[in-house]
Amino acid sequence: MEVEAKETYLLFANSLREMEEKLRECACESSEKVRVSGDYYTWCESCDKTIEVASKKRVVKNRNDPRFWGIESEFKILCLECIGKEFYNRMVGWQRKKWREYRRRGYV
Image (cartoon, rainbow, N blue to C red; front, side, top):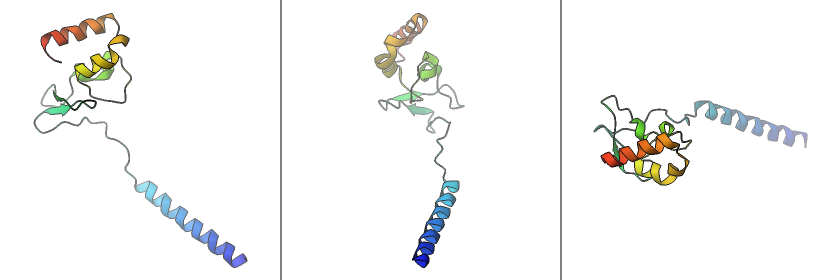
């Protein structure tokens, strides 16, 4: 029994060490950078609609960033159509006015 217990302990300790090494090498962290193609386009994370980026620096325009509208969302990039569908009721006065202005200009 004693030999069996030692073997079980060594097996457990070895597997624990292996898992620790795998966890150290794990690169599961998501990138903070926005996904932009080489043609300076990105996509809405909700409906996959193409969106132009702001400049050659590949920065997403404020109007496509949910944080600009004061929205806490798991998505980093949304088209104005998706923002209007999901969050229009939660917007404050100036945000609704700005959203309607962008819509009138044809950015949706």
